Length: 399
Image 1 (cartoon, rainbow, N blue to C red):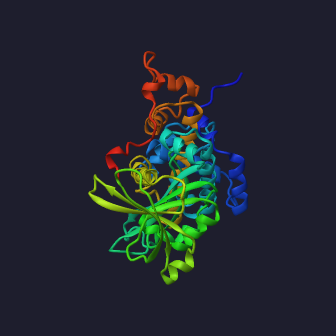
Image 2: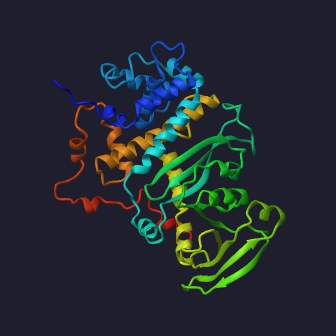
Image 3: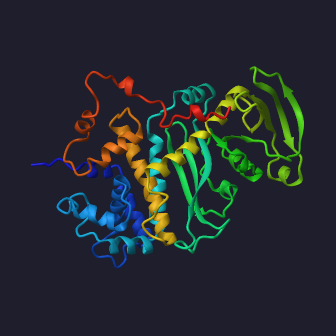
């Protein structure tokens, strides 16, 4: 007779274990391991993320409270904090980094959450919209002496590409906080026909050329001191659009990095009482819509705020660089797993609500559809629960 799987097992079924096993074999990470495999360690770290454990001892106690269930959940038996600490310090971080990328790429099949961007994409034949930025997590140099000090603090930086249509990350790379944001601009996985929204700090002509060569589009703010020639001026449409021009960079290094034409849009922001200058390689989308697209860059800022508040990415279970990176990559894996489960089961609330429901139900033996039915009143319709985006960014509007 078949048994109902635990909620934790139903969630982790959205992770492709066969791909993870191939990555473990690639990095030879299970060499000499008898009981506590990389897969066991991944599930333990996901358990810690979903239940918001604060320390290794906290993880150990919470798992021993369910010692009769952990084997069937795939975690294994007799998990100790020494095993977790050793795995965090010595397992190859490449396994978890590559698997996080696999999970983020799988999220590309999720349903679209933002109807406005979907309409813009359909109107101008744009396949996707992505924001690129980084966020720094400060570290105490006394506990993390391997971190490069800056202004008296250590730190790590999460370079992230964020899918604005589906409200999930598409790529994440963890480096030291001394690395400049634009350093890895040429290493991102750009996709043809997509639009990439960048902060002004990413004004790098070689990076622009890389995006152009992939058949993609970008928009960013004009950096101060950039020299250019105006080649053509177009009539403006919209009360806040001050000018719409074709330019070409004339600085020695800038022109060598990007020799093609660019579009310069000057837009007046009434909320900031400031003139904003946008640069893009797209000449089809109208100027007002370009300004609107740049407004969506705040979504990634709120995403960073969200993961720091609701996932364990600011306090760590280990002090080594390996432990810090494994914990952050497993946080991104957990986020993607939750997003895929919520989308598959048609949950109409926010991801924060869904994660809260899961966190208190991991050891229940109940079908997911029955569990979610507890949190929807019969008189309430799906439309009442529907949220077009994960975050409310209207109050942080740039324009």
